[in-house]
Image 1 (tube, rainbow, N blue to C red):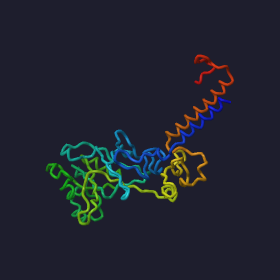
Image 2 (cartoon, helix red, strand yellow):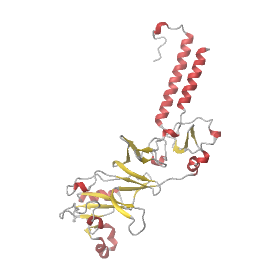
Image 3 (cartoon, rainbow, N blue to C red):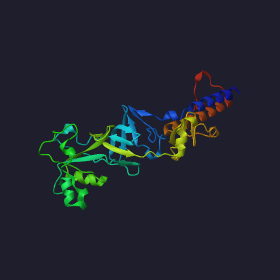
Image 4 (tube, one colour):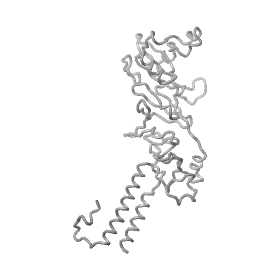
Length: 320
């Protein structure tokens, strides 16, 4: 019976170790950037709509993953929901008149992201045989039905490049155009040397000067709000974190003692079998279960056989 008592203690200790805090599996920051719902950098955290979108790489660098690559994130604003990303292949002030071919930025249309209308795109040295490069007000007066197709050569930003007004020489042309889709951006870059994106940052002051231009791409996002998520986050109901099952993508409330489908103080569900939020922790649980199974087999084998002396291992008592 001693063997089974030892096994029982071993089994209890292992299960208690495996069923650790589920909510602690969700990191809440990457470097200095806070990670809140609907995002997560650990699988099973946040909303499944944004699964595997953010990557926290070393050393604590947060990146946005899109079909065109991975881009460093400068900040995330949850009150005015948007992400500001930097595209290092775009033109910047240090480049001056030395242009390099950029990689067109694109977004996954299946994700709840959109390019903000607060972005302005500047294109340099465009072929006037293939691109309509004219002052927008004058062109729109003459061709109101084609107003959106012009690349505005009288743009304020072309005349006042943020941070480096006079870095472009007189031989370089500049115009401002807002691509309606990724394909139109590719077409523009087919006939222009390079481009850059300028985002109008809200300064939080009164009109008329409440915004300022800075380089970057603003990506707007939606925050899906559900009753279950609000209940899960409610401090009076346990203050859990909203997540999802990595296999079914169904909602899960991540609590200190496990996952539930409602809220952490709903004790009626705490007797059920909890699925670990992150896939890595699930793998650890499986490995632990295998180890327990091996332990059961070993104790039964030892009890039914003669003890092995001096620690000598034979084929009769080998675990693997």
